Image (cartoon, rainbow, N blue to C red):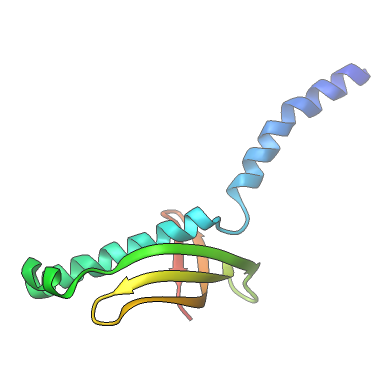
Length: 116
């Protein structure tokens, strides 16, 4: 009887880990992926508005690094409010490092950011 319970618990452990991995706050890699998608969209819009030459002349936005500092569950709404440090270059403004708080929601398309 004890052996059967131990076997069942061992069989459930991987399932528990899988479920735990699917819930909770976004990882730093998840946050990076959201930022990279936003930057790609912005660069594409610049090309569509001014053409490839103008985009090359002005330069494209580039993410150098991102660090997840902390996340906490959002109050009275879905998702997580995450403090992140972002080092990126933006056309005409140059390179800078900023700390921001943004709300991340896990949708059917993956993590997305909802600005306040």
